[in-house]
Image (cartoon, rainbow, N blue to C red; front, side, top):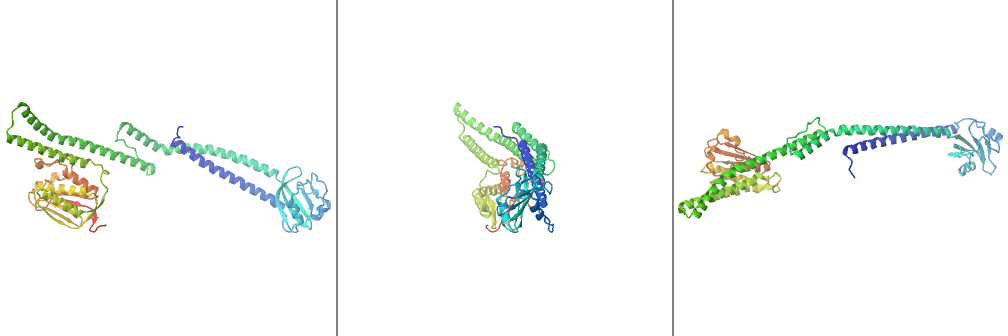
Length: 446
């Protein structure tokens, strides 16, 4: 069975709610009118205080047989007796209930109830004890009241039916108007699903929930488009960077194969240099692939962040740098941050390695009040190159002869950003470059 559309369900919901409200209002109106009419009938039956009693006249003139007309007009009146004496009538007779006989036997009692005449006409009856063993029953016909109520019910039913039709029409109009922005959003989503065109955007009008949904959708598609562009750029840059070492490797391996196939042995020194070059190219490829994998991770594709003793992470990175031949002077105050220990250690090591490339002397590493600085005493970086240092695969012209892929500082920026911090690179006063990492945290473990 095909499911109903949102527009149909919304129309039915609005119609059902309005119809329910109309039905409840009509029923309430009918019951209020009925209550008022019955109250008027009952008020006409109860004699007001101080009204002279007609009981003696009634008892003297009532007849043992019912008759069509009453002394009081169309008001049937009759007397009943507790000792079993047959009732006497002034007008059409009314059916006597056991409750009426109880009133006749009980001095000072009275009773208001629904009843009927002997011929079945509905009446409202007021029975009152007027003397020891005697009660007078007075009635008012309910035929006119019931007819009025039936007509009122038909009128209210017709009004309710018309209201339901109007509600259905209003519900359809409301659903069309309310869901028009949703329809535009649906078409945009379907268009993107079919064409993969992430540049599609939806006009945002107003500040209601639909407008916020449209704005969120535009932000989502913009983020996806940016992620796609970065992925394409990464693939293109990676292909460009991999081409050179792969070409060199292929050339060197071709030389070795040609030497073996032709029987022309290479000079041992030349062969050793060739093999050393091949090993270096493999090492460069390994580093480049590792850096690419590090950068290609999604924002959620990492280990859960935990509390990290940053001073211990920096000390471990400095020790690893010393094993690689770097001269590192570290001054570290306690500082605890939330992040990934491995990523932060890799970032600090990359900063030290980057400083070591340009500074043969000592590298100063300082952690104080949550700010980590790594300074070298090299030649510095030209001012026009500073804005590009954290870009992927970007390398300063002066650094191109040196080993590296141009991804080290990009990995630093990514790791620091994941930990909620910032990193900058500037020329230091007195010469050299200083890298500054600011990570939110505390001096005591949490």
